[in-house]
Amino acid sequence: MTSLELTIRAYDEATDREALSNIWFEASLLAHPFIGEARLREQRPLIETEYLPQAETWVACLGETPVGFISLLDRFIGGLFVAPGQQGHGIGRSLVAHAFTLKGELQLEVYTANRQATSFYEKLGFEEISRRAKDEQGLPHENAHLVLKR
Image (cartoon, rainbow, N blue to C red; front, side, top):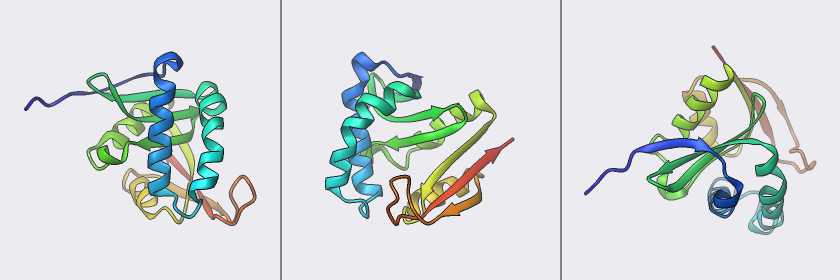
């Protein structure tokens, strides 16, 4: 059995949009069940037409296949998603390390109900600097604002 090497490359809208949208949706269903599938389906077109094109997005690939991505708005991680079948293999860690090398400091918001993500970020050295009781749509989903500095 051949082991494929993980590579990280820049987002290509022409070839990556559908694959990254699928990764986002499947990973979001798993990580954010409290949001609900209907709301995630409503958000999906915005991911494809607004968020991915407007962000600096880096794609993690095994061979030629995208398996995860990180989207940056300057030093802010707008999204970090890894295909559910590929989680736990260091892909997310590699994407964060790549972004940290580029930016030198990173910030993000994470749903506190997403225990797997909050634990992941803590293990990487992110520190909480604030919390808010509602998400950006004003819904009662608590978020923690985290920062990673050199």
